[in-house]
Amino acid sequence: MLKSKHLIGLENFPTSDLNKIIDTSFKFKEILEGSERKVNLLKDKTIVNMFFENSTRTKISFTLAQKRLGADSINFSSSTSSVKKGETLKDTIQNIDAMKIDGAVIRHGHPGSALKLTEYIDGAVINAGDGSHEHPTQAILDMVTLKEKFGKIKDLKVGIIGDILNSRVARSNIFALKKLGAEIVVCGPSTLLPSNAKNLGVNITYNIDEVLSWCDVVIGLRVQLERMHLGRIPSKREYHSEFGLTYERINKLKKDIVIMHPGPMNRGVEIDSKIADSENAVILDQVLNGVASRMSILYLLLADKSQKL
Ligand code: CP
Image (cartoon, rainbow, N blue to C red; front, side, top):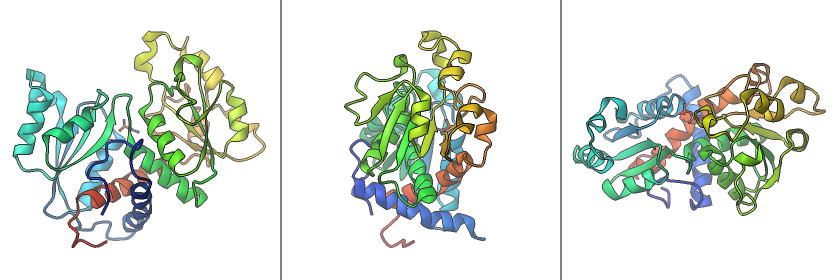
């Protein structure tokens, strides 16, 4: 159903596969909004969700998507597993694979861990976020949300604000938006912008007001508070003042812009509560579209050819 066997990242992912996942997501969204909400397209399939890092949205969303598709799912959490006794990633995965699974979803702090997993298991591997490398399913749900809102992605003007250097969400979104023909400007403190931003095919500005008056949609990124000790931003208060999606900034624009955020949000740091909860924010639409997108991804990677949607 897709050219790809796995979904590890969007940098080298075929555009035709990306478009097929996005289009199929809308069919699953219709199902989710109907009275049944469940289809048995992955009956007899077993999927393991392996989370070596914390997650709320992605983990629940994948589990729900699997249940809605009628798959058997197993949730593995590293904090309550034999990883705590020193078991390696390779041994953990090979033991899980020995129990005959059809697919694995992995979130891990190390870039490359999802790709590594493909060496150890036979089934499809889906990257649910690997360090600062990629978070492809977040970008796909963001593309579905944009297409739903604007009817297209080509020529959309998208601003991405924040820690571009360490953000897997930013990287995957940049790859997806470029493939689909959007224009992108990234904005943040110079210490949090990658030196190769030009190679990524995006423009840079250090002035948030400039990007807000240019864009149709802005994606605010989470300030990674766990990295504060590295001293890349002076303080939460200064970040909010220089790069925050504040009520004053958004309110003074002479147009409406769509506000997105992947979550989890630091209210009062990268985004004001009044903006996060405003009519222009599609943050909870992103969450619902996450279930539909992940149903689409799981179906297209794992369903038997005879299982027609
Ligand atoms: N957006 C996202 O990945 O959220 P979680 O870390 O809660 O899964």
